[in-house]
Image (tube, rainbow, N blue to C red; front, side, top):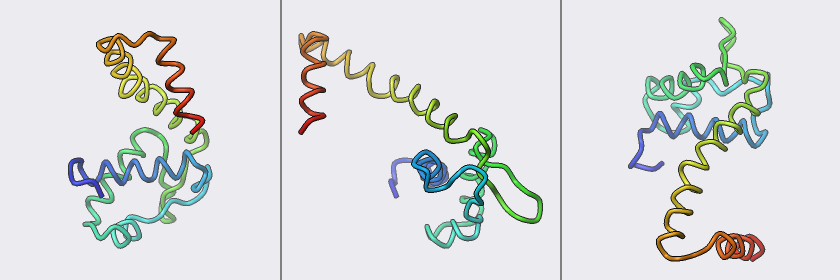
Length: 118
């Protein structure tokens, strides 16, 4: 766990990762709040808060009396969400820093290509 960010956010991100990578398939049952709490050794209320983030986003839904399930289309929606945040979080700052250092777009592309092949 990363102590610089709220635990519930990290729980939500881990479940998102499992959905994006296919570990948790669409319409499959998600771990219960108690299972998450025991696995991460956290308060069940914290686990619930993390799961509720994904419920609010439409990635998970509840079947009354059965548990939480991955929504149809959740993988696609989460990938799109992450792509948008990737640009804002990584690409724009990278381009800004490259500009400060006098690195052209062509040079930056070559650097990325080289790093990607190593």
